[in-house]
Amino acid sequence: MGKNIDEKELLVLEIIRDSNEPVGSWVIADKLSEKGYSVSSATVGRILNKLEKMGYLEKEKFRGRVITKKGEEAIKTTNVINKIEFHKKKLEKYINTKVLEDFLVILEARKSIERTTARLAAENITQEEIAELERILETQENNYRMHKSISQNDLDFHKAIARASRNKVLETLYHIISLSGQQSEIFEYLREKVGAPYMVSHRKILEALKKGDPDESEKSMIEHIENLIKDVRTYWKTFNEK
Image 1: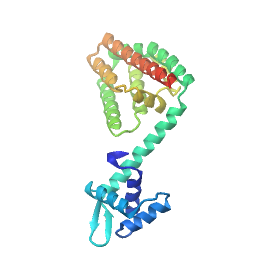
Image 2: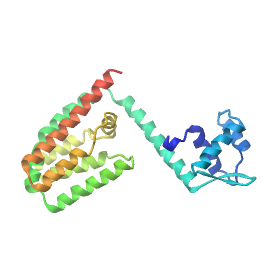
Image 3: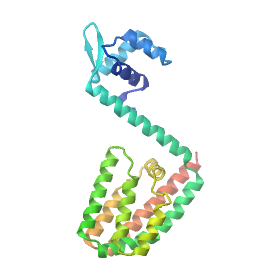
Image 4: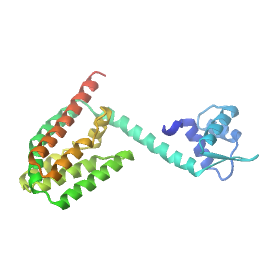
């Protein structure tokens, strides 16, 4: 959990938050017992002291503890982290050999199409479209820092390049491929598991497009897709060795 808060400590914070008055250790011990945790008043006291030192609680003399603004934020943050971890475990169970095989087939198709869309985009892209790509990457980078999903940002980035190619056939082909769901939360989770630096390749592609360099743009896109293929194969190897 976030910042050294374990399950019992989170429950203690929630018990105090939900109380209309300061809460003492005996009351908290009883509440924890109701939730299936057998803890002594002394143990609760140690938890309260720790949470107070972290700035999550304040003591009202002879009455008990009350939660601080920082403590309320800690509850929210910890619950978000717990949801993310739960979601990741569900994704891990879903990924199987068939899913990985499909990813590889789609990635090979993407490489054939997107190397050309990147090349054509370098020749035809406008300053407005470059600004749009920059905005997409800034949003993606911000979402990544906030531990939010970036799969839609990834999709938006590649769709914008396909549009900038001015080739309707290639743009349509990319849109068809994008409907496969390859750029999904599952794929996002997979790349995180293998420690892939997700947005480095996107920045290289954008810089090449800014230069209007078809060769470099094509090369950067190929490198990006081949890195994705490598990530799938790396996960596949790890997955099959479990």
